[in-house]
Length: 252
Length: 267
Image (tube, rainbow over all chains, first blue to last red):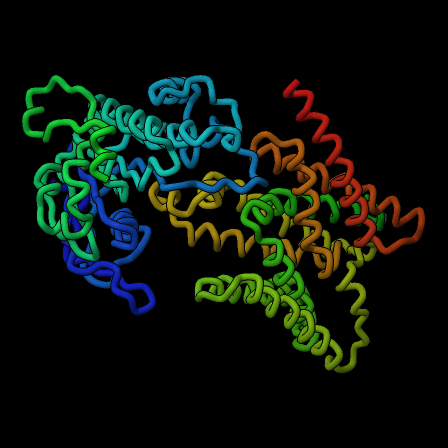
């Protein structure tokens, strides 16, 4: 059974149609990346799938009792609200110390438990958000532009971490990105969105699809696979050859 | 013991401080200060209606405060700028309330008692209602605490955790209306919002966790109530404003003390 399934989704805001006729499903253990330019309805789609927004047309089915680990795009914590990391990780469900310490260690920020969220760096903050999502023992991890505000190495490190964590937990991953340079090469499926689904497939198929080229220009050809780390899996041959950052900049 | 008016006044004030502390924290965290003002001002209209229909003032103020709070929540969702909506509602509620009170036939109403509070006139019956209302608010906030905090941090995060942020917002709205009704006789409509915000703001300078901030806000409120009553008795000043004045002094004192504490922790 699919974890989340959507059929004929449509949504308008103030008379402007943001999404139409979107059919979508995420299967257990699958990594799906949604890419699209700004205003293409990526975040809206994600929010519809999570049940934050109600669709105007179509319907969303989530597996009953689905455990979702959600990493929001950004989280503004009001300066008036004191919030140590440990307390944040216990919202809304209380977590024991024995759970919190390994969760923080796993995402690479051990020892920040007593720090205030407001004092964390951007990268630490995102990792704490990820730790919070992981504590829910999610069947699906949902990330909305989770690396926004991180620099290039920070971003690559975050994706590497994400891949590790996913390999350990075996959960499905659904993420949204407007940053086409850095789409996780490990994605099983990339969905190119622009109000509707333009094309979808493996990262390579999408990068070569004419619809994708039309949207993002031929310049980004292959750049989809920029972030890769060295796997030694045998399915490696399915992916396009890794492109180095320097080469990529020449193309841009 | 309850025969002494000072004892009753102190107990009523402590009950209000206990409810206003944690609720005031949410008012600060969610930037609802003006929202609190609108709800509190609406209480005057509630007073006028209760007098006109000869019902309990508690019932009237709760009903009208709740109606205005819900109206604000509804309008806020419709693309109006929040401060404009609140500015319109807060002051119209006050104006209509004051006008309506002047129409109430027969009774000569001391409107000052409702605007500034009349804590020294709290009777046994009042005390029971104030205590009950405050206990209700504290109980409601304690029960929903975790969900309320999550929804305050981020509504999306709350949604993804299977919570309904709309419901949590409603809990706060109802709690706010209840505190307004309960605090009307103690603090008065004009300064209820201050009783919510000032102790919470003072607590912020020392608190490391949301729970500590709520507890410290209650403590600051207690100091304000006892100090204000004392001042009122000594210098014959109006009790409600005296309580808020002491709260303001606590806040002012918290600024250098908080800074000192932070520096010591760093150094």
